[in-house]
View 1 (cartoon, rainbow, N blue to C red):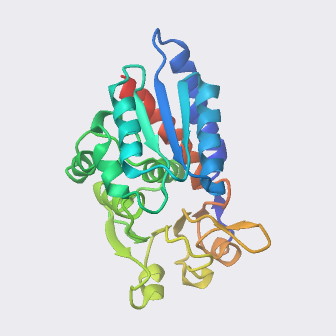
View 2: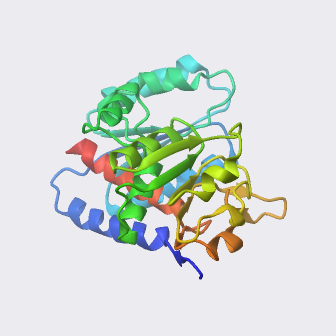
Amino acid sequence: MSARLLDGKAVAAELTEALRLHVAGLARKPGLAVVLVGDDPASAVYVRNKTRTAERIGLRHWQITLPASTSERELLDEVDRLAADPDVDGILVQFPVPEGIRRLAVVDRLPPGKDVDGLHIENAGLLAQKRDGFVPCTPAGCMELLARTGVSLRGAEAVVIGRSDLVGRPIARLLEHADCTVTVAHSRTRNLAEHVARADVVVAAVGVPGMVRGEWIKPGAIVLDVGINRLPDGTLTGDVEFAPARERAAWITPVPGGVGPMTIAMLMANTVKAAR
């Protein structure tokens, strides 16, 4: 058996085209501001992809690039300026930020109604209670890909590997809301292979190349590989051993071209929602 690919690039293109048509009919175009602090190459690529997509679907967009020497106070002042700007509907601060700036201080400063990355404690609380708010983009994209399989999640065993505020914890909540029985594992989990082996759905989000061995995957499982890691030779790989995992799974995301494009599509959807 060879798993079917969950083509996030194709699904994201479909979603962003629908958003483009929707935005074209709006009298007021939604506005997205993306803040990049420092010169991290990977972050610069992510921000460039986000602003290009925003331009393609017709959003007003601003990229604010601040030097690595920016202080926490200066960054918070920039967030305050964007929060007060009526033209800006969504604010995204690209993480990681340079040393000396507290990530949670920045997250706490974001107005919940413009927090299109879904990180503010108010949005996290709304998600926990299954109420309407902004869902973090990568978990939202994962759920959209799961829906595309047509497989019922009710009663399924799901294992999430990783417990970050951006991916692990919110995707666990979303899977729980979808009536899965959810186990959250991490780098210190004992007998990780045993947890993965019983999972109908595996979400790997730890940032360790090949951490999830293909032989661990339960035959017929759905595998979402959120990890994107650059090897010494420059190639990109995920957290899952792709080739052997594909021989056992029913569905699997490639890296790149799986979850990554969905993250950007969901950011655009959240920005349109913020404007609405």
